[in-house]
Each structure stands twice: as C-alpha cells, then as structure tokens.
Length: 493
Image 1 (cartoon, rainbow, N blue to C red):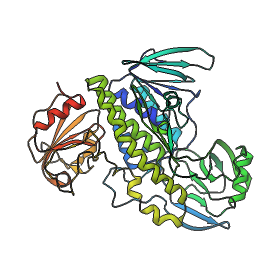
Image 2 (cartoon, rainbow, N blue to C red):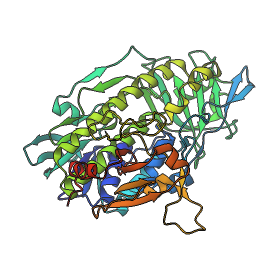
Image 3 (cartoon, one colour):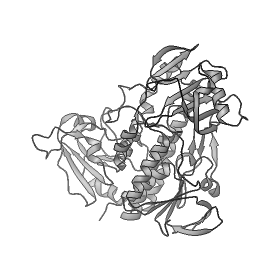
Image 4 (cartoon, rainbow, N blue to C red):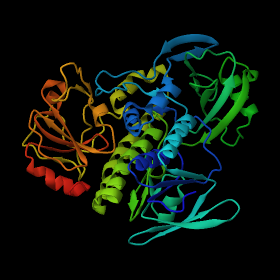
C-alpha cells in the first residue's frame, strides 16, 4: 500500500500493469489499485501481436512471456466426429514490416498479468487489491482520489496524475462524465471458459463450425493442461455452471459432457463496439477498455490497451521527471484515439466473419494490420517531417522505426549487426544519424550512427530522433531543427 505516488493507476489488468511497469523503470512512483480481491484468473486475452511483443520486450518481460507461451497451433476442423481438414487461422504475412517477433504469441491473460506484476514489483512499483476508487476530484496541480476497502475503511491519495485502466464499466470514465459513442450494429453474444477436457490432442486449436447453436472452439493453453472454450451463446439467460459447459460440449461436438473434467473460469459477454469521446480530462486519463471496447475479432483487445500504456508511459515520464510541458500529454489522445478507431472497425468486421476456413481469404487481406506493425502516428502533433519532399518509399516521421539489422558506424569489424529496435530498447530517446555526422546531443539522448545498408535505404539520409516507444518523432537533414523538438519533449538543458 503506497502512501504517496506520482501516478495512481486504477485497474490491475494488462493495461494498468504495463503502464505501471513502464513508469517504474523511468523512476516514476506508480501505484495500482484494483477493486478485485486478487489477480484475474482467466485466459481471456491470449494473443500477443508482433508489435505488442516489441513493446513488452522493451519493458523487459518478453523473455518470460516467450517461456510461458507458444505460437498459435494450427486449426483442426471437426465434422460428424471426424477430422475434416487442418488449416491456420494465424498466418505470417510476408508483406508485414520486419520484426524479431513475426507471429502472434499465445499466452493466457492471467499469466501475462503475473509476469507484468512481477516486473512492476521488482522495479519498485506497488499494487493494492481489494481497493475501489469511490470518487475523485482535481485541481490545477493534483488529483484527489478517495479509496475504499471492502470493510468500509478508506483513505485519500493525492497524486499529480491518475489513469483509469478499469475496464469497459470504468468508474473513472463515468465519474468524469466521458461518454462512450457506440460504433456499428449489434453483435452476437458468446461464452468463454477455461476447462479441462479429455479426448483431444493439444497440438491443434479445435473447431466445430456447424454445431447446433453456432460454432465452438477449444484452444490448448500453453503452460497448463487447460483449454480455452469459446462458443456462440444460444441462451443468454442460462447460468454458466459446469453442467452448462458440459451441455455445450455434448451439443456442439462429438464429445460427451463427461469429457469435461473441470471448469476453472467462465465468462459471458455481449460484444460492444464503442469509443470514448475523449481520453483526457485535466490530470486524468483513460486507457484500454475504459477508453474503447470492441469484440475479440483479430485478437486485438489486450494489445491495444498495452499500446495505450506504452504511449502514455514515456510522456508522463518526461513531464514528471524531465520537466516537459504538460501539453506533451495532449498527444496521447491525438495518437491513440485514431489508432483505437481503426481497430474497432477491423475487429467488428472479423468478429462477424467468424473463425472458420470460409473466411480465410478475407482475414488474409488484413494480416499485416493485425500485427500492429504498420500502425503510425504521422498526423500527430509530435511527428515532424522536416525533410524536403522525401521519397514516398522511405519511412516518415510518425512511423515505427524499421526493425532491420544494422551495424553502428563505430562497431568492430567482427560485429555482424543487431536489430534496430533491440539497440533502441530503454527509456530514452535515440538520435539516429544515417549517412551523416551526428551533432552533439543532450545527456538524455543516445546517438547511433549508421552508414549504408538496408536501414539507410529504408530511412534515407538524415537525422532521426526516435521516441522511447520506437516511433520516429523528427526526421530532418538540418541539425537546427533538433533544439525545437527537444523543447517539446523535455530534452532541453
């Protein structure tokens, strides 16, 4: 339990824990409060997209997540009790940008949260369960949060900033009066559960597309002996008892109800597609499902929340630790709200399509977008493209820096190079000087000089100030442009 903090985060899900872990490594005191009495125990958001893996690698948890997970297995279709074809829901797209993490990674959400929390605690952050935000108010310099425990005891915590990462029914959002604008039409409800079941191999993601009431899928969860069940709901009023889960299996698959030997977690959900009208109110921000909700089509939900946190974390760090102007924080909404809007549209389309071989061609059209690697912030007030008509074929300000293998100009003759994003990892800015001499930089900026090669071809000649989240903030051929940008992000002096 923290008596003081720089940032109070409401919600200990993937978004809140990612933000807290990122802040802690920047020397920002981050405290997380969670209304639930203990960590979440379900597998819900099990897909980590390639760009998300890059972000989590930078935060320092990807090695543990690789050990805890696996690639997605091939799909196995069943009809009339017989295997009826093997295929892949998740294909590598050769058109997607190069990444050290080329395919989605399968990790149960509860395990992802455990790993993030371990990282946070090791970095000096704190998490408090069984603590609910009951009210908040703010002044020019502080946010006052009233926190209450189940026994009725409470306390007030005053912090410079507060972030609501408390889900689709966000108390923070509702307290601020921020409306959610519904997008698109109604979507069918679904059941998800973590179960033990006999009679299936663990080398496939099993699907019964034609069962009475709709399709049913069972995905083996790595590091466990469990499967995640996902099925269209045919009776929205039925309680999700173990018997109900067994009946679903017996009705829609060739397996008997008795094949289900344990039900550890269940959830019923009616997907909704909605976007908050704003992501900031003074010193309070919302992120993840508190800011945008959408169906699980394409495996994007957890990922978009992680990227909200990854975007906001470095900006809060610059304001709180490096005296950047508070206006820097306005770029959070300017960048993340359009990104969320794009995902809402795509997720709804893929959810309606379903997960079956018939939709493979349509899904293939969107494979690169689903990786989140092409996502950019070109229209952001933080993206300054100062080169005179750069070729359309090179990266622009706002783009993710390409993760191509490169060899720094001062490397030894035996150095075969490393991926760029690996060289950029850390809570700092990097000035990338490509085929040009690097100018002097402030102490908080690292310099990396590159001469020739694939990276130089992808970027073009010039100076590229790379933000802590791996996006190009400034692209220029004139060193004089750097000082103005440094002032915007707290790097001057």
